[in-house]
Length: 80
Image 1 (cartoon, rainbow, N blue to C red):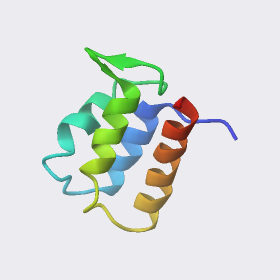
Image 2 (image 1 turned 90 degrees about the vertical axis):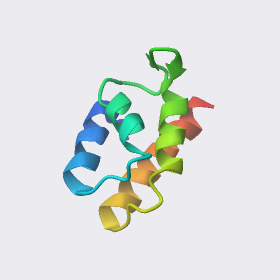
Image 3 (image 1 turned 45 degrees about the horizontal axis):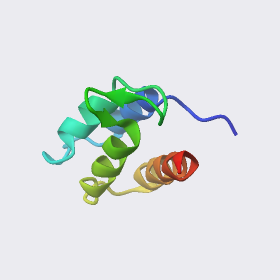
């Protein structure tokens, strides 16, 4: 399975999650400029940004949310 760029995943999140929780917004915005889990955004690694996003995305629910969260967790696991 090929992994999608994080910026594409972020677009899917924005399309599905209509009212993004304010705590997740800065991480989702940062994800829009990332390609791989090994990238960096300013001083933070992509893995940190994805972890912080997931921590703030607990209110995002539904089938699409489960699929994308699973995909992001797989990227994190791959990075370790």
